Image (cartoon, rainbow, N blue to C red; front, side, top):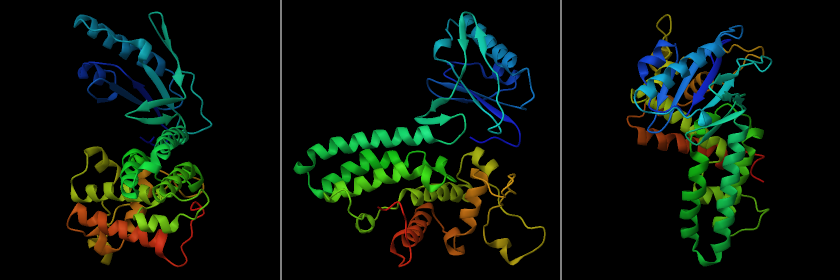
Length: 320
């Protein structure tokens, strides 16, 4: 999820069994799941009609549901306002019947904790906390497990959580994802039953594990490959676009992605649409031209593994 220009995003969740025509008539976008529907609205910071528009949409939905013998549970409806800039503050509050819906600082979306600044600090803390609890439980039975059984258990209960939706963390600095790296370090030491302060790079090489930052890049590049091969969801095709030069160049047939101009004062951006094309274009041409997804993933992992762990001059302050 990312904002465009100076437009602010609003996320409304947990509205069940909706009429799509009503949602569209009020200018909202939507995502529908088995037991949850999320509404999205983008508006300019100076728009003073936002609260009224959201209330009107929810009121129409509530009336539609009553006509179909359903009940809109306002007590479980959440409102998340994501400002286009940190300096912008919105005074949005919804009053429906006897329920007041105020904006939350965070909201959970398919297991991902999204905060109103899109820093994902709450999500990282939540994942690290759940992983540490899993490691604590595994450590209690470690004397009764073989190394291979411990590795399988750690990969199933810890590494899988570190990898879940990790492409959302693309562009974050190392200090932000350090809690996740510390968890992975502890997991590697637990597999080999090593002391707390042992250097983990040899353990990662033995396990053939990529560090967290490289795993994030690997997932993002996999999504980019799916876009270029035509197997990605349509919403990713809008975010990532093929590079089309204005005139014939040697790079015209190298399967590159267009890098949007960052709209920041420092000339850089953390947006998925900016960071991922840069990562993709830095890959060797044979890797970008891989004939299958499985081949591409193997080639990218080999590159990342070599750059992060096996190069003589490669260092990572998180491996301590």
